[in-house]
Length: 118
Length: 110
Image (cartoon, rainbow over all chains, first blue to last red; front, side):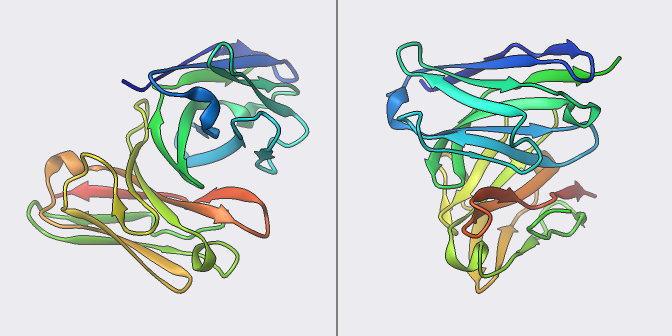
């Protein structure tokens, strides 16, 4: 059974940093692109970043490029999202997803809440 | 402002049919596969349609996807109260080299 479990969310001050983790199980992790998306309160779903199975090919949304870093550890079946210079507008539930085909992700975690506030 | 444009809301009574449009451009929808998601805040997004018109495993045939030029459409027939949720289209944008989503459409079941 495919499972994705996010962790690492919490309350952080503006300008602070946080690293999210997504632990995967039930599939050949290193063969799949992985995505991060987020949904802010009262807002829509927004794509954040993706990383190929080799960990080399990476893409970011303009809103996070230069502040967020996606990475993965295939030995631990885990994908990470390192977030720095956090802003109030980064407050959202962050979800990781397994890529099925290009922009389609077939399995998702339940999400982890990040709140950026002083 | 989202790269893909969806109507903010649609509504339908149980048993009726609804369509949700997703408008883009030649750099995204016209030349890349479109997917559709159902999402309720606080829950995991649910993939409904991928590759324009393929239903994901376990998705009932009440849900369908189509595409023509720079627009895509999600159709839902036999609306049920459990379909009340937010729906998003998504695709790759070749010019921006990012995944793009629509702003989302809230389906209300009357």
